[in-house]
Length: 298
Length: 252
Image (cartoon, rainbow over all chains, first blue to last red; front, side, top):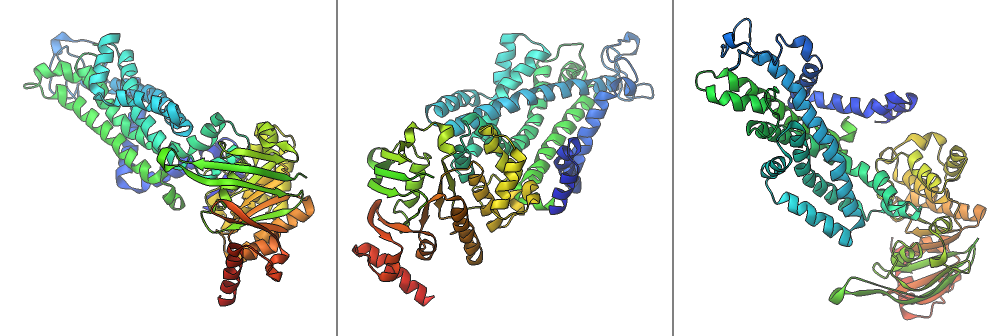
C-alpha cells in the first residue's frame, strides 16, 4: 500500500488520478467471475464502437426474398421475418443498450446521491419529506411504474429512458441516506463543522466520497435491472420503436415465429442474458473490490 | 490569547419523558493562556461541555464568553479561527479517504487563506511530522501520528483556544507521553488557552494549572494543581476521586 502511495505521488496529473481505477481492474481480474463480467462488458463496448465494421449487413435492410432463414454461411444468426440479418441487428442493438444504461446511470446516480445524502445529513422534517417521496416511488413495482410513465409520455426510446430513470433513483437515495446516517455524527464530520464548512461542502467533500463505493456497486447491479426493464418495455412495444434493432423489441416481433424459427428470439435473448449477468457479476466483484477492509489486498 | 467564561450553562438532551438534564447549571472561568482541566467519571458531562463551547451542540442556555465576547455573537468564520478542538479517537477524527494534504487544505480553502503550502508545512513541522506525510492517508499512519495530524488540523487556523477531548486516552502509554509533551510544548511556544477533558489524574497533574472536578453535570470543586500533592480537596466526592486514583497508581 505504501508502495502504491509512492508511485501515485511520483506521477501527478491524469495518470495518478487513474491509479485507483487500474488497481480496481487488476483486483477484478483476479476472480474468474468478475473477470468474465469484465470481458463481456468490454466486448459489449467494443461491439458498440466498431458496429459498422463488424456488421455484415445493414441492420435496417429488408430482403423479402430471404425471410426467416435459419443460421447459415451468409447470415450466421439467420434472418428475421423481413429478411434482415439478425447478427447485424444484434451488433447495432449494443449501441441502444449502452445508451440506455449510460443515460439512466448518469441521471440516477447523482439524483439518488443528492437526495439521499441531503436527507441523511440535514435530517428532521427535510429528511421525512424526502423519504416519504422515495417511499411513494418505491411502493410501485418499477416495471409497472415505468409502464405508466411511458404510457403517459408516449412510447419512444427516450421516454423509456426517462421512465426507467424516474423509477430507479429511490433505492439509490435510500442507500445513500442509510450510509450517511452511519457517519453523520462521526468526529471527522464534527471537525469539518468546526472548521466552518457549510452543509453543502460537508456533503460534497466528506459524505459523498464515503457513500460513493456502495452507490457505485448498487448502480452496477442496477444496470442488469435497467437492461431487463428496457427489454421489457421494448417487448411491450413501449420502448424502442420498430425498426430500431433493440433486443427486447426484436424478441417481441420474433415471438410470432418462435415455434418454427427459434433463432429470432434465441439470439437476442442470449444477448440480454449475457449482458445482464455480466453487470450483476461485475457488481458483485466491485462489492469486494471497493470494500475498505480489502484495501490492503489491492 | 483569550479567556473563556462559562456562566450558567445548561443543556438537556432528548425529548418528552426521556429528557435528560446533562448539564443542570454550570459556571467556570479559564484565564488566558491557562490550561484548565475537567475531570470526572464517565457520563459526568465533561465532553458535553466542550461540545457546547465548540457549538457542536447548539441548543444550550446560559452564556459562554470568549475574550469578553459572547460566543453566539461571533461569526462562524471568527469562531472557527478562535476555537478549535482535538478529538478523543484519532481513528475516527480523520476522514478515511482524505490525505493529510486534503485534511489540512480544507480549512485553508474555507477561510480563503493564502500561502497554503507554507502554512501546511509549518503546521506539520509544529507537530513534529515530516513534510512528506502530506500525501499519506490515515490508514498509513499510526495512532500517534494520526493524533498529530488532528492537532495540526486544529492549529492551522491559528486559534486562541484549543479544546482537548481526552486527546490521549485512545493511545498507547508511550505515545500518550509524546502527545502530552507536544501539547504542553505548543502551549509554551504559542500561548494557547487549553480546556482539557480527561479522566486520568496523572494527565491533569502533568498538563493543567487548575482543574474542576465534575459529578453528574455539576462542578463540585475547582482545585489548583497543588491540591493533588497537598491533598487539599474539601468536597467529599473530589477527595474520593483523587484518593481512588492515587490508590490505583500505587497498585499498578
